[in-house]
Structures are given as structure tokens and as C-alpha cells.
Length: 594
Image (tube, rainbow, N blue to C red; front, side, top):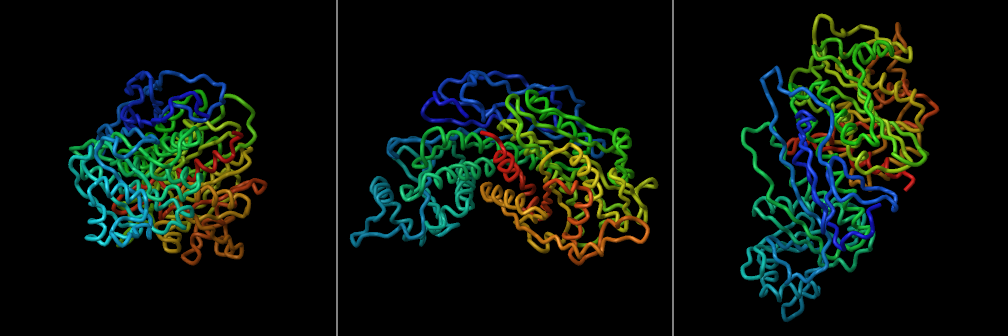
């Protein structure tokens, strides 16, 4: 927990600008920043969960680690620029609006709260006082623009002579729905980020017109979701553009959302979670000529180096994997000139007893051509197959966040079998039979169903670690996109207990998972005449048969779940989303002994 004798107002500043996930780790500058009236949280190294007795350090070291070769792609000579991250101080505030000095005042307004008296004044006391302070401008813009507080509505107006430049009203929808979904609060944060960019604002003050009608739990969750929306909404990945621009927003203050250590801890947790999401977005956005398997392995080593007190890294090369008889994984990797890298990060609390052991496995295809079953024609999405390592990105993003949060009592193994699925004379062919590390044989009837082959050996490896629970994530099937669209991940598990845990974690994280059936009768489609199984059963129930395939490689005594995140990992206008990082973090932290 954060020390209780800190200043009354927690200030959380995202200091990410020194960290480039595609630059040599040794080039990260080592800095020390004195902490006076605020708590500085580096996305790399600041522990957020600690015993109350632990001393609070007055300095934060931003970078440390191992030397790496400078990355420059041989294909296209592409070298990413240093990333530009938002540096935003987020703090709860207890002050009168007319005393504040800054750029934008944003007021969240619920639908139905804009009622007026016959003489024209707002019935809501907060809106009434603000309208009087601003000479009636709020009443004018709500009438002129038909603003009613519906979710998605917003209106902004310039001000002069009041200590700040603009005032905005943002609709929050129905008050009774405020506690059932985090989306409205995250949308508010994203709205703030968008208008801050437009106005080139440096500081924003946010308040909710009916905050007194919200429970303390809702306020806590809302403050976290608003912060998430602002931080992620302010980030733009411009590493591969010839020109970049820096975000201008430096300060976000929240009025009426609570004060004290609970809110401080929640905001600190939120910052670290967002740092993990941003890393996942960067990894997925990176082009396949830059993010090859060895670079993904370097990123894992960077995380371990930055958190050496709790995180260790083991990287297996091709010979190591051959010794472990990972024939399914190596079969996929065989055609690529970029060698495979099997990644194993292990988080172990620095002190205390471990009571839970978890494993999180991510599909790590840094590019998927489809192999000899080449992706061709409209809808094949071959140009987007850099995102076929979205599961691996979520795993490393979660590892980064967990290493910073430092939950006690839980060991977490983060596993990625990274490789490319390419075409060559020595590559995997349709009709080949592969032997996985558990001895089961697989007839390859489609080389474009390769992700499950890499996951097969990764799941066997995870099972042998004697963990209690395994969750794997993969951009596995187009069938899941057809079934659930681009906003919802599919969850497959024979365990009701684990399914309920993940469902609860996704709700706390503001993400959507939907439990899918594991119809055992569909396994007939996966049978082979000459091997133990084929690697794909055809189009009907494709996401279900894929999950049934993965089940063959998990120790049946373990609780296991498979998350198919092919839909929500990518949005056309946004790019990578970092989906599943928040859910994984919430799931792990729930297993901690704090």
C-alpha cells in the first residue's frame, strides 16, 4: 500500500518518455527525481503494493538494464523514433471552482439533471452555481445546442475573465446506470483528452454535477475509468512518422470523486495498468519488419531487467526447444529466416509466502502469412497480420504492470512462443505430421491454423510448471470475430470457477468477455485417420474446435481458460487497443494476499 503520511493530494505523473521499447535498453538514461509534494510513479519501476512498514524511497530510478543491439530493420531500413508519451499529473482536488486557474473546466452531466425553475435557473445546485458564476452561459448553450445529458453528447464554449479558457458539458446518460458500466466514465476521459488536444490545453478540472448521489465505490471506479480514458486517449503512437507532436495536457484534477488513501491507491494502480496497455499497443502497432521474434524476446528481457527484484526472464532458442521436443511450435517456425524465441518471464514476490501460482500464455506470431495456405483475396487481412501477436502483447503488457504493482502472495508465469509463419522450401506443408512436446501427433490440414500449434507446446510447458491455473490468449479464429464482433472476446473454459473469475475481472477492468460453449461432440471434426488429430476441423464451430484442440495440451488437473481476442485486439481507426491487459491485471491482483 502507498504510505499514509504522504501529502493530502496524491499526484500521479506518468514518466514514460525515457522508455522506448524498440531502443537499446542500455541507452535508457538513469535519472533520479526528488519527490517533494507529489508522488512520482515511473511506469518502469515504482512499486505500488507494499507492506505498510516498507520505507518510501525519495528517489526513482527510471532506467536500468542489459545492453542490446541497436534495432534497425533489414527490410526497409526502418528504425523507430523515440516514442512520445503523455506526462500528466492526476490528482483529486478539494477546492472551489472559482478559485481554480487553468485551461478547461469539464462538467459531467447526467440525463435529467438539467431541469430549470420557471424563472430559468437550474434546479441542480452545482449547475445553478456554475451558471451564475459564468453569467448564464451554461443555460444558453444547453438550450441552443439541445444538450440533455445523453451519453455521447458534449458541448464546449470559450470563456474570458474567469481564470480559465473554456467550459464544457459532457453527457453521462442515466444516473441509475452509472454504477453498472465503466464505459461512460472512460468515454468522459477520452472526451477530455480529445478536447484538450483540440484546444492545446495544459490543465483540466473535472467535476460531476450529481456526484453526491454516487456511492463511494462508484466514485472510486469512476475516477479510475476517467483517468484511464484521459491517459490512453492522450497517447498517440508516432514512432514511425517522420514528424511527431507532443501531447500538451499536463494536469488533470478531479473534484467530488473522493479523497484519501483508497483513491490514491486506485489511481496509482490505474497508472501502472495504463502503462501496460500502452506497451501492448506499441508492440501490436509495430510493423513486422521491426518486431521480429528476437525483438519481442528483448522486450521481455527489458521488463525483467527493469524489475530485477521480482521478475526473471528465460529465453529459449531453437536448440533449447528441440531438446524439449516442441515439434508443433518449431514446425510453424521452420520456414522463417528469423529464428523462434520461446519467452518465459516469472514474477515472484520479493517477500512473503506464495499461495497462488498462475500462468498466462500468449500467442506470439509476429507475422502470419498463412504459410502454404497463403492468405489471399479480400478479407484475408494479410496486411494486418502483425497483430497476430496480440495475445503475446497482452501478456507482456500485463507482465510490465504486475512487475510494477508487485502484488504479494502470487507467482505469475508469462509465456510466449514467438515466431513467424512464412513460406520456404524447408517450411511446414499441408499434410505434414507434427509431434508436440507431450507426444501427441497432429496432422496439418491447414498451415494457416498455426497459432494453435505454437500454443500447444506453450501450454504443455506451462502445465509442467505445476501452476494452479492457466489462461491463454490468442488472436486465434476469424470465427470468433463473426460470432462476437470487434468489441467482445470469446472465453472458453471447462471450469466454472475460472470462468467466473475472468468474467468478474473483465467487468472490473471495463472489458467484455463472453463465455462460449466447449461442445465435446465437435471433437469428431478434429480426428485424423493417421495422427491423433488434425489442426483444424473446418468452418462450422471453428472457434469451438480450436479451443477443444488446445485442451488436448493442458494437464486435465489444472484449471484452464482460453481467450480468443481476435476481434477486440484491433480497431481500424485506432490501431492496437491493448485489449485484455486490464483484465489480466485485475485477475492476478485478485489472487494476491494483500
